[in-house]
Length: 226
Image (tube, rainbow, N blue to C red):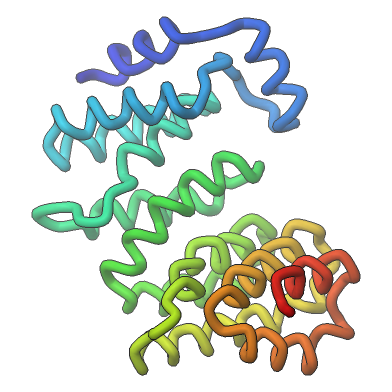
């Protein structure tokens, strides 16, 4: 599977009118083919099954470099896997290298799902992610929260994961004064998801920091609290 082969398969599924609609919706200046995400997902699954890890990394890198919306989504999906054998460090390094190039939520979120799995596999990588929280690049700051969402999802978290959860909540606390809508939304997203498992901790966060959050963010964070 060469990059040209992969692009040919994506182009074969293109819908020009949908491409126009997607460009208007996503508002990021890049080519769009008009291929639905489920179709990209199916293609990426086929490619993952057929390729070695090294070949997947090469294909993902080449697809990302095209700057085509669907190709970048496919690049992320090539690396979205709970366990990558024999060694997933190359996958993490490639994912992390894409973060500074984020410029729109859709691609950023697809890559974030791939990154979540690599962080869960090796939580020591949170040391690197913590450095993102002070980046001048808003999408990098946002990625620190979106990639760490798995730490909101365990109702019976073990002590190590509880400590990681508290660490990430510390990052969120640093973000509450950030005026950017996407950052405020990411804080709300993290807290809302955590409220499903640990509502008391979210209430405590909002009691301490909620007054400094944007009103929409504070409402969204507490939407599932009773």
